[in-house]
Image 1 (cartoon, helix red, strand yellow):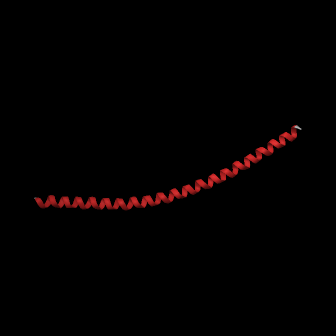
Image 2 (cartoon, helix red, strand yellow):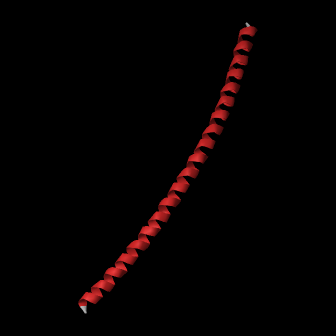
Image 3 (cartoon, helix red, strand yellow):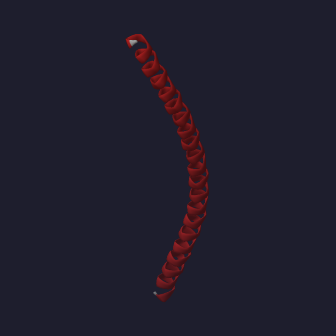
Length: 75
């Protein structure tokens, strides 16, 4: 009798373990998908920041050049 109860409990534990294993596999897949999406967003953001940085540097250099020419021409 005690052996039957032990078998039932072991079977229940094995079933719970299999269910946890399936859930962890699903979570692992979800985390991989999110990681890939974040990588794509990061790449797009980096490209936009690079483009904006070039524009800002160009505007700053143009303003600085104009200011220096104005100062030199005044003298």
